[in-house]
Image (cartoon, rainbow, N blue to C red):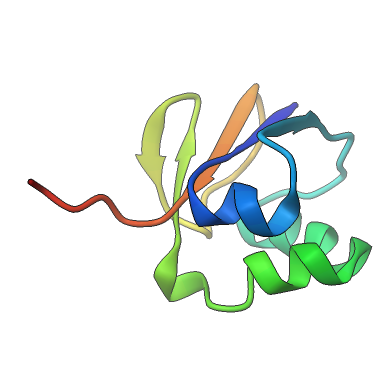
Length: 81
């Protein structure tokens, strides 16, 4: 699946997107797999309350299933302006 990173998440990880092969059943399990990779991922996912996730461009929760999902995007909450 494609995993996309936006704003400071992208800055901490150093990539705008990547293809990830995963056995994770939920977004939380995917985050755990990514966090275990390297310190830069651990830094990006250190505070999940400061992150939002979208599955196939629809806002979702971290306990959402990944079955059939093609794209996961992580980003900080948006602010109006």
